[in-house]
Amino acid sequence: MLVRSQIEYPLIPGASRSFWIALLTIAASVGIVLSIDYFGLVVLAIPLAVGCALLLVKFPEVTFACLMTIGSFKGARELGAVPVDLTVLLLLVLIPAVAIGIWKKHMMPLPWEFSFYVPIVVMMLLSLTYTPHFELGLDKTARFLIINGLCIISPFVILTSPARINRFFLTLLVAGLAASATSLTSLGGYDRLTTPSGDTIQLGHDAALGIVIVWFGLLPGRNIVTRAFLYSLIGVMAIAMVGSGSRGPFLGFALGMSLSVYFWKKVGFGSGQLLFDSLVFGSLCILMLLSVGIPKASFNYLAQLGNVQSTDALMGGRAELARIGWRLTLEHPLGGVGIDGFPTRIAGESGWPHNTLLEISSELGLVAALSFCCLAITTLKATFKEFLHANEELRPAANMVLGFMVIEMITMLNTGNINDVRQLWTCISLPFVLRQLRVAEWCS
Image (cartoon, rainbow, N blue to C red; front, side, top):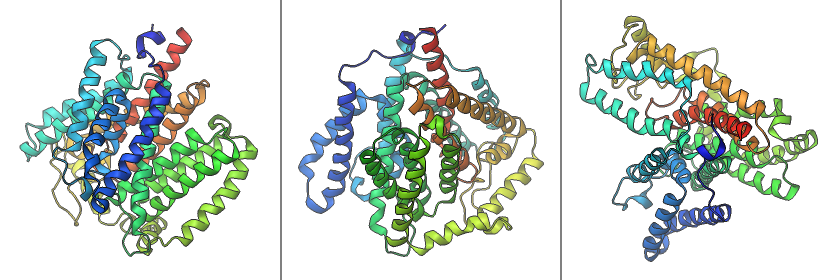
């Protein structure tokens, strides 16, 4: 039987104030890094690097969130001189933190639902014996086991208190704001907005997730002045989300907002606040979106969501990838074509179906796909249960986990491969972390 002292790191005096200082440091760091090219502030590089390193070591939940979003930034030309891959650097900081937490027995027990991972991993390893691309399959398997495995396990070691979960989400928000703000320099042009790394889909995802974090976790119960400031942040990220033209994140955002209205009492909005905010600030956001020069290409891409009568019009080249994934599933139902055995280039798109379920079924077979479906269903069930039963302390975290889950479940249906969607694997762990915290509260 768990008690709070068994699953939570000792509290650090002044941690809350330290974190807000760290948050401002991150914001200042982004501005400094982006200014080096223009103002020659290279002299600040060394103290900036030292300060960031100390921050990442002291707050492993911040490091974990940075791992989720670093892909949006490491392709930026301002970071071209960094001598080490930033993903590797974050892994080198995070892995010791997780290992120490496990060694000191700060790790929560893994839930029984994680047994659904077993068939997926077993089929990955087994399919290496027949995949047509052994080296590529081995690389894909190793990446899944190491990087995504870390994303799956880390929440049970690092996000062991409501405060740590909130800091994790606040860091994701800062990343979403940074990606959104830097993308606004492309307003008035012809191409869709992108992250500093040049990714439209990731920008839409980061911005949509940032909006959901503000709406679910920060807005409820705030006074009018604070809400006005938070809505200005939403406005910046809304421009970036629409400007990216990313359909999956936009659908996830729309569904998350719809759920928040339906569950407004649990989210924490009073009926008067919800109605006032929806009418006044919603109208201001719409006016801003129509007047800031969002590229027509972004609106045209989003308009494809209305082509529900034609799969090809809705999904573009990815429709052909989905059909091939389904055909391979039917032709190889037991073991699939092997890990990373999907054709490398089709219809000008990358060599995967851009649908996590189809990717698993076509490469690993129906047993692994069914196991993933069971994992997704039990995860969604746990998410809604924790959302409905969270106490006051866990309420913001439960709200944000629900919004996070909606975005990731929608995004995985038409984006990336299993090693690109590391946010999905992290998100799957979070409702079970909340369950452990809720049980610990009852047992303490």
